[in-house]
Length: 173
Image (cartoon, rainbow, N blue to C red; front, side, top):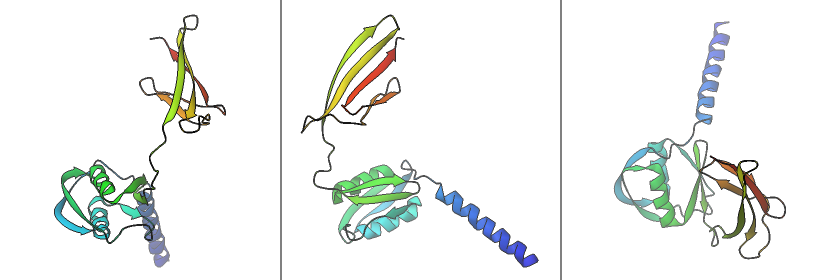
């Protein structure tokens, strides 16, 4: 009976520690110091993984793992270190939970410009402004569906319809 209790407690402890790690989030603002030296991308990932306590996920066939890079970090945030590496190797980092996904940048990875036409209407009867507009692809002039249009100052977000149209209602202040 004692061994069943011990096994149960060990499994419970293991489960709790796994759950605790599974729901962690990478802290990109943590400051790291890495001694200045030239090392391979593979070695850099190992150092960052150990210091920042994060995991990296990537397709090794697409990564320049043996390419050497110069990394100097004295009390720099993890975010700024990753941006520096990204610029040197032309790769992209994205965070999911406690894992940083690494992907090779594509040639045309820059987001396309979008045309954004709108007009503002003053609606004093309902004490609000109305902004209506349409979002079009800059290259094809076709309407873009499901684009999020937001006013950060007012924390208002709307989505475009099938014709790329949107309407935002802003209350008077």
